[in-house]
Image (cartoon, rainbow, N blue to C red; front, side, top):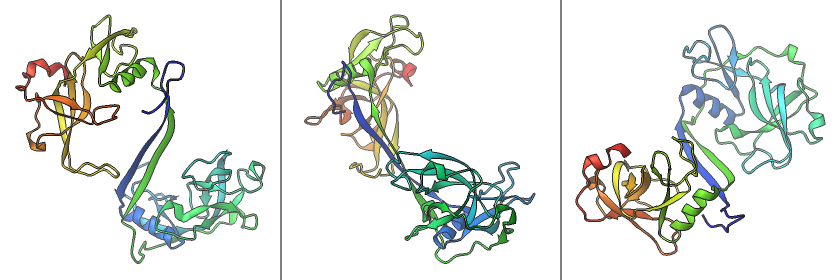
Length: 324
């Protein structure tokens, strides 16, 4: 964390980003492929309800659903909320409404952006809207660029019945990547500020509970077991013991580490619980519980880059069994 102290504590912008790749079953595949082709599909339940977006199982009975139907491209706003300050990655860059829209022929509502150029005064429950399609479509919910007002659309009471659809399209979509991202400002507080500042000096500080005497690393400012402040600072490590570990076989996007590699829980000497870190300097299949390790720092690094074996004999299980 690169930040200057503010009132004694650190503060810095933090981004948590995770591109989630998922495969699609036949219903979701047909729905997203249909959007690419400007066709909106729902799924019909045994009691005749049409669900849009479609689900693979009835949310009330858990019965498997496969009966696809095509619904309209116009619909009715059932509820909405105004978004006056759009964030990165949202459908529109200017203020808009998030709206639940029940498309003609559907019995449930679809959440999407509603473009209302005249402001929130233009939006109301019951207003008629239509889909505005994206110019470039790939088989994703973003193929619907947004909804837009459609005052000329027929009243909802005259909506057509949903028609059956085979769900068959050329070149169907079988998987999607959902980009999850969270931007926020992280302020660690006094205890973790001291911990981070010590790490920058290649020292690891914990805090001891005056009640149970457990040393918490990283410190939390209070003991979660006893509920009392932990102001007694204790330097731990630098060496420690591998308590548990896992072998990572999937390469993460943007991470310049070759697979397979090992991530482990490491109980630093003197600590009352284990922290996690990457193990290197040893073949992945030789990492084991009880392995004694030490931190390796890169030049200018504010935290250990990884841990490597110290060459000491393995720790006896009874010395770390309470830390598993």
